[in-house]
Amino acid sequence: MQKKFLTLTIFLAFVAFAGGFEMGKSRSREVVEITGGDEVAELSILQSSKVGEKLNVQIFDEVWKTAEKKFVDVEKLNPEKMLYGAMKGVIASFGDPHSEFLDPAESEEFLDSLEGDLTGIGAEVGMRDEILTIISPLRGSPAEKAGLLPGDKVFKIGGEIASDFSLFEAVKHIRGEPGTEIILTIFRGEETHSREIRITRDFIEIESVISEMRDDGIVVVTVATFADDTAEEFEEVLADLAIQNPKGMILDLRFNGGGFLDAAIEITSKLLESGEVVRIHERGKTDQIILVSGAPLLPQIPLVVLINEGSASSSEIVAGALQDSGRATIIGEKSFGKGTVQELISNFSDGSTLRITVAKWFTPSGRDVNEEGIQPDIVVKMELEDYFSDNDPQLDAAAEFLETGKVENAEVEEKEDES
Image 1 (cartoon, helix red, strand yellow):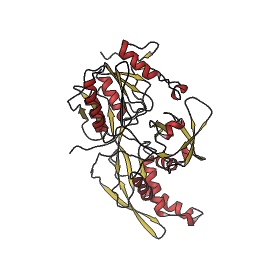
Image 2 (cartoon, helix red, strand yellow):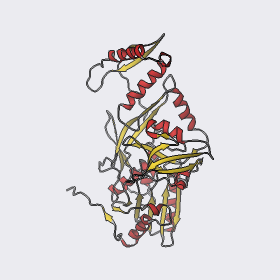
Image 3 (cartoon, helix red, strand yellow):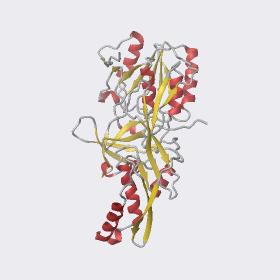
Image 4 (cartoon, helix red, strand yellow):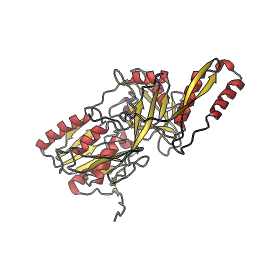
């Protein structure tokens, strides 16, 4: 049975941490005792796999005991809280914004959030340069209606400073019951003044695939997310389009923050006859080259893919594969740049959860898009006023390119000579 895994997506409607890389690696361990008042906690310290020498864990014990002995407010000492804080610090020391440790209480709240109706503001967030950043507001969501845009940097959540929270804590503070309101204070682009975005939380409904046939014979297929049923919906849309025989297709991946890799592979496979979709690099293993699955439905239709800063993860996998193969022309703005895969581990005996980056992915040509993004072949920007009007210069440019083979007054990305 093929394993499913996600490229990281965190919805503020709910939280979907990535899973699927189920690994059972055995590590050599030594056990030291960390005293905490009348209690004793056992802490397993991994041997240093990087240099092949054991870590000096005695200093941990010494600092723990010294701090416990010297701290003035003895009633505030909580050995369990201290231990979980230490584990959070270990993961934070990696400097990876997508890896995080959740203690048992946080873990229970997080896992509960995956059940039931999707509620919240309907946005996807991540950490960029240690700043809480909007990856993408979902189409039609409260976040989009309120005016949140990809790349907005969150300074305050309500009246609290966002940088005081971990990613999970920030998500928890922004989520809430339908009908309640949250104010996000954000900085946008190069602006030096902040903006307050007032958002009323609601139930979130996500329509994965939307198709619209234009009067000019060009079809626009919008993929909003890569969910369980997205590939099946996409296949149904293409099967119907094969009968209609459109003269061109615009695949709109703007504001799509990612999802299941399987869905990205299947969608690419319906548009590409052969070749690679993505390369997965996992520690200690040979790189996995994932090929298209075959049986394309519209492998020859003229194709343009739209991306923007809200296109991340699986969206970038699809855009990168279609760009590298020469199958599609990419139009819009540089994508978000999320080139890693996370595993969710929630089977620890105390109920805690670890979300850890376990792999990197590369486009078929070997490009690393992490923090770099996919650069469009033709750059067409959206001005601020375009987002809040009926103007869509990127969509207009895509239609123009399919009609004429060029876009007037557009910036064309210079390709490096690979010869």
